[in-house]
Image (cartoon, rainbow, N blue to C red; front, side):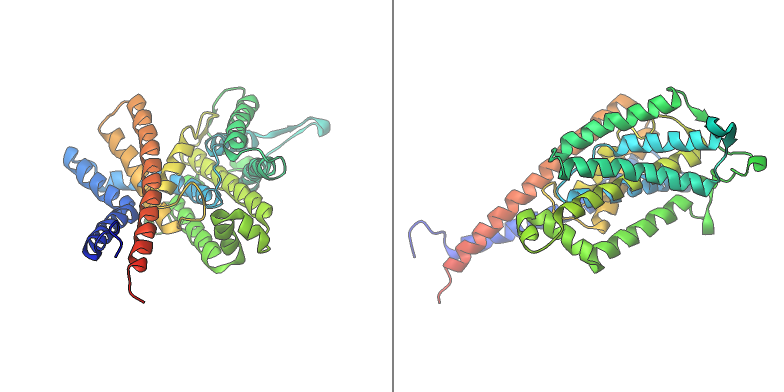
Length: 360
């Protein structure tokens, strides 16, 4: 045996330590969730009450819808910073449509039905996502720059449409046939908020798409190694564009849920939601390099982020401190991702060392 090679027992001990660390990394979201529940449960008596858990569930649902769209983008190795602005834009478009469209060329005001408002708002989100996808694929703009620019474009459009004002009382009027918008946020089939049902349905759809369809295989392949996937016949650019379109649609749907629950639409809605979504996806086991991540892990990450925000609000922590803590969380989860990748490299090197030491 060469003198610089560690003895087999030392290699085995290091392998056990690395396996333990890898397990901690793999279950980091569940560990964080347990810590938050215990911590906030000890700090305040109202955290684990039924009313608060219901409120937290509604927050989880909205954040979950956005995070599921973000998961697809990150699986492809991209990022979407525009989702928060799309949430605000979607709510403003809904408010404008419910208030009536002034069709001056025919001298009339049109009041679309609620289902039409939902379809048009989701279409707006998909259009923003399509622009993101085209910028990234056709013009080869870096995803961070493209979506960062669209963050301002979408927010600016929301400001221009609304004039910077807030749309109040979105209940509609029975005479105009545009009532029922509030049910999108307030309805409770079987006693469960409809936003939860929407998140669950979307999660099942995304899970099936990732595990049972060619699109899911293409997405993981393109995120893991774009060049190899392209040589294998995967439509890389099409996949990249589609995930941005889906992310835009999810953000628009989240904006509708928020506006419907509050029956108020404001262009400032959705600020920092992109941070929540990114933190949830990375905390749930995805990697910013792409090719790794699951729906289950993302939902656990959403639980962690939503309960963190909920607990801070119950403790009456200043909004400024909440923003600081969420920013620190983003840095922390990215550091965890980097640490996990270094750990995997060490495990691979250790496995190679152990195999070299085995007798033929």
